[in-house]
Amino acid sequence: MSNIYDVVIIGAGPAGLAAGIYAARAKLSTLILEKDSPGGQIVITEEVANYPGSVENATGPSLVARMLEQCREFGAEQKKEAVISVDFSGKLKKITSSAATYEAKAVIVAAGAIPRKICCPGENDLVGKGVSYCATCDADFFTDLEVFCIGGGDTALEEALYLSKFARKVSIVHRRNEFRAAKSIVDKVLKNPKISIIYDSVVEELKGDGILESLSLRNVKTNELTEYKAAECDGTFGCFVFIGSLPHSELFKDSLKLSDDGYICTDEDMKTNIPGVFAAGDIRVKSLRQVVTAAADGAIAAVQADKYIETAFN
Amino acid sequence: MIVLDKDNFETEVLKADGLVLVDYWSESCVPCKALLPDIEEMAKTYKGKIKFCKLDVTTARRLAISQKVLGLPTITLYKSGEKLSELSKDDASKDSIHNMIKSALG
Ligand SMILES: Cc1cc2nc3c(=O)[nH]c(=O)nc-3n(C[C@H](O)[C@H](O)[C@H](O)COP(=O)(O)OP(=O)(O)OC[C@H]3O[C@@H](n4cnc5c(N)ncnc54)[C@H](O)[C@@H]3O)c2cc1C
Image (cartoon, rainbow over all chains, first blue to last red; front, side, top):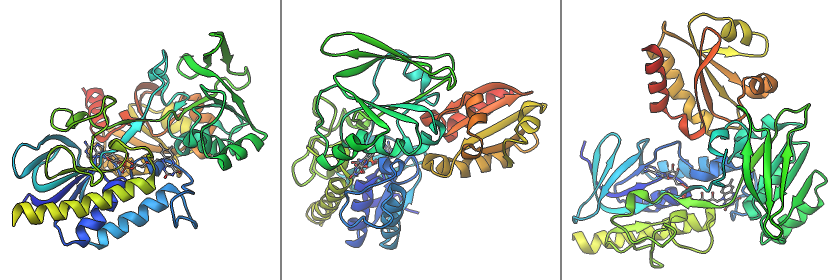
């Protein structure tokens, strides 16, 4: 089979899937490459209450399953392959995956983001040993135990509410003294008897012999250090981290224009600095990183890719 | 694959001779479910060399914690009941699990 497509989409999160739906509906031959299971970051969250129309069965996985089905129905091809390099220098763009090299008239980069780490001593050694970035994966381990939830944004607070269904006690560690999250979520958190909040604090160190046993917090105003140790009877506790994300843009740093913090720069039509290469979703510079904006980006990118192909190749 | 639980873990894993691979997973862990088909395929590839097992941690939370497993997915290789090597979270990819197995088989 030919390895030339009209559009190759890198990443099958909400942005990539929306782009796939629009591109395939426009009768462009479309290939979506995804290194893991489709769905992106949203598959690890229990409730997606703010995506328009996601009312019934509004879990991340069910939302993604519906997007996937829609994408397949319109005929976008999907492969489970990781993109390992790209060459955007020619008129036909080359995308090399772990399995093959593909050529495309247009490329939509929708590789998303990964959770930002605290970057403190002990963190890396204790991932999967008490330190987690995925509440739906790991909350159950902490049934009737204590957990710390690091971060003060919408995601941290939503996940703290989810964790409170399992844990005996949830302590939110927030580096400021007030929340910027949506007021309705903050209210729910403040009313939850299991949740307490530690303001003005950041995690300084995580310790444990094989499993997480101690966490040190530093008060950013007084510089005072406080160490929390696991209760004797528990032996451990959880530390869930939701402090934002980092763009998956390593692969593109030599070809595309990135912001100082590594996000891809685009105009409002999702065009990057290279004609025929578009970026959509969490990977690009924008003010709101959510499913609804990722999907919108994907749609715009696909429509623009269609227009570009029409002018550049006909 | 052998389905483990609280009652058979000791005999199937800790008291077993040779190499045993345990896939710690749960129903709500989407990355675990994405990985499972790969593990099932490996179970066929390495049949007779390694015993492949899976443990749904929601049925055996304490047991998993006693094995110092507190995050999913975790893939652990045991040799004669002792932990030999382990891959967790993002490190637990198909390729790295193959490599872990290959180096254990020597
Ligand atoms: C815990 C949590 C809770 C959240 N809750 C909400 C919520 O309630 N509501 C909401 O609107 N938003 C929520 N978000 C944010 C939302 O998940 C993101 O904004 C959205 O997923 C972004 O979509 P995306 O398609 O741009 O990127 P992603 O979802 O990050 O998807 C990118 C995909 O690209 C793949 N990829 C990356 N590199 C490669 C490569 N080299 N080759 C192949 N594939 C690659 C990745 O594996 C991934 O599947 C939450 C995020 C988190 C982490």
